[in-house]
Length: 125
Image (cartoon, rainbow, N blue to C red):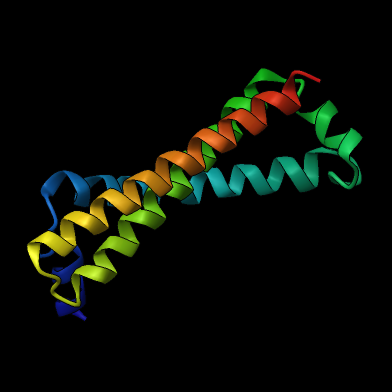
């Protein structure tokens, strides 16, 4: 058990301290935002968000839009950093790791930009 804790408590080879810190912080933030997301979407909204009209009405609150965008950015960043960590286990060559970093970066930025655009588009209706 202590080996597992020691492995979690330090960056992997090929992973910077900043990436490791972001992964740890987004993991904790993800738990909090997921709980808020589930509670607000399924318990606060009477009957849940079952129709598009309900979602549009729900997104009229700017705090909801902010929360959903934060949730999106946290999920995307945490998952892509974790995927990079998994790929690091295969010990890629430095040039392959550079390609992996660029691909994951482009995918992450694209996903967040699309999600923000979609949230703002729904909120503007």
